[in-house]
Image (cartoon, rainbow, N blue to C red):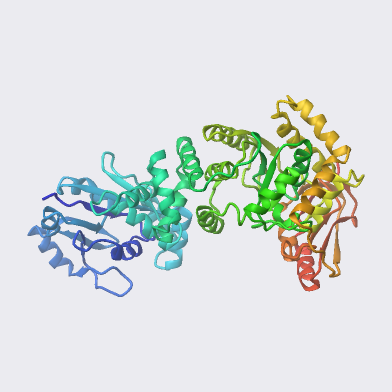
Length: 593
């Protein structure tokens, strides 16, 4: 009979060891796992662990008689792990025990197989938990935090379980640590647990694991723990493997042209309706560009929200194909076309927890482009200190990753870092952003130059991939001409007609103006604040709601100048947005020198 393994769980007070151990117990086969009852020299009370109590004198006598495999002192109490667990281990039962890291080396010499599971929690979270317990002085808490950073002895088998999120995710992580190598764990669950524990998986592993997740094979908490691990512990080979595996989840669309173009932005900046200008330019040239886009999640408008002001976007595959056959392009909502349980799950958990999903997104975005039938893709990677990508260096690194992963799955990808501090257009909200797009396509003198310049830049890179065009400079001049001549406008009108014109609203639009309270120069426009005001006004649900910027970065401002206008068809929402704007304008000025 194989001997059992002792899982020795260590971690500072406040790390949640007791809650995790209690929570994981129902998931463990009872004939394979035993929870050791510690002997402690304190009276058992409801809010402490279930243990055997005894007096200090009895404890010391039992220690002399060899009743404990190890003993230790902490916080004025004696703790003992009973020697009876050796019998369970020798009979092949795994034992789970809560203990002190100071006893690890001693314990290692006394049990046949030891695995230390370290429950860790970021120091700031741990400090808050200890303060909330209201049991110790600030000095005692800081001493606890210092002990919490002591390392595990080298050479000891160790799994680290981070308990920094929800209790359910913490339990899933501990379950993965305990059951990863258990004989009763099937292959798929074994792979899931390996990734949760931080291991790297192969392309073959992801090819069988991802479909199992789609089939709802695992619990929501286990899937969340897995996806969080994928946001934190992915190497480039794994990103490529995930992208490959995801291309097999859905059949690839077939298009009657060897080149199928696409343009994607990581988003996170105000306005930026570049896609809605690029698509008709490329379609006017005769290349296919079937674009599926998302609705807003935290911003005032997504591409689909804005296009919905002009045309129907909730299209079926057949409707998309029919539109592209006639017009070369479309701008449709991806909710019915690229639906992914994986992305729904990861977005749900990472949005609420503020986790970094950039590397997972590389595999997600490119696999969707592949299954949509695209062959050539340009990627816009805006960087700004308040955004998803914060620096030029990060954006450059991510751009290279997009291009390498794209190449690995058979796509031609060009990715470009762009300055996210500059607003792209004047409108924030579906109708106002649609107005900006139409002004550009109509060659209106009021069209925002920032939207024109960025749209031509990305259109030029797509056009340069066509051997008939040849290079970026030729693509740039061609994009300018397609826009100037009205060809792009005609292309957009054809797309709108094919998708179906949107119904116009008859509701009156109300507005308030926000003015500067001092002289200065616009130094920054805070996208988070501006988007929040626009959403409070009703965007993107109310298509006419939003913000119309009247000043841009670098402009000189006089006190009393209008910074922007808030508008909405709902007067009550507008008043709420106006109140917020008076508290936080979102337009940051610096003094004129």
